[in-house]
Length: 344
Image (tube, rainbow, N blue to C red):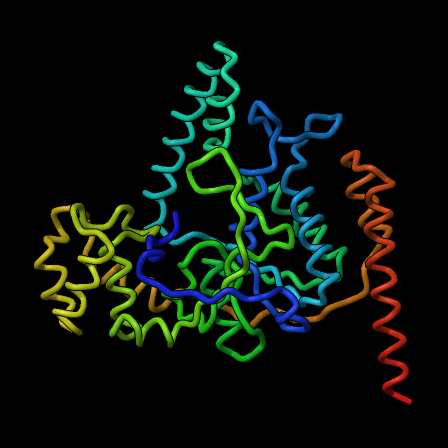
């Protein structure tokens, strides 16, 4: 869902060239959903190979990752683990919305209404286990590390940055900030275009970075209050937040009650909206499980494995894949020669 922080936070435009050689932890599920939502046919259907297997996620991942590698970014892909039990209600809500969207899509299909078909098709997006496993295989073939989070990927990505092993989290959502991500990069795309939320068209976007400390100072709140603010607006664990309270009113209340969260959530009648106490959500966010069981190692690209997955299994154009891999091969050889020269 993503926390509706956009109207409260400030970001600065950055250039991708300025991120050269920096380690970035990618919220992988968030990125894959972007590809599944946006890379579709005119009628809104997902792209598939000759066997009918979905390829939209692999097309997006291959294209974007190769271009970012050409810019010498060091990516770490972090994947979600077991979702918290409190998230089950949100998952059920999303499932119901997808089912409803599928019904609307079928109606549009009967009328041959391409615009409606495309709109509702995007809302039926599902990321399957098979898609996730294939994405991991492609990332590994690129020689980049895959980190499996025990629970929420945003929390694990933020943890790696906080350990000083990476520069920033990469995600379109703001959720990593409540997990103390020091920096968050959005719109990390070479093309400069992204599907606009809730719309059929694409808009020009530029990469932007948010600094957590800077935004906390601007808002006049601390990290704990930021979590409380998110809970009033709505998180994945208490969807839609408190009815009638928007981001600006929520900020006003958090400033007013300071650290008196009992008073804050009592005043907004938390228990009229949720059948669990506010502490459950608050401490779930504060103590989200993370792990040190990972290795950040970047290896050479495995061209054979990449061709096997993309060309042989999913009918990607051999010419297109070879052309991309040739560029990456030259970059890889150049780095190795530079390293050898530096040694001597």
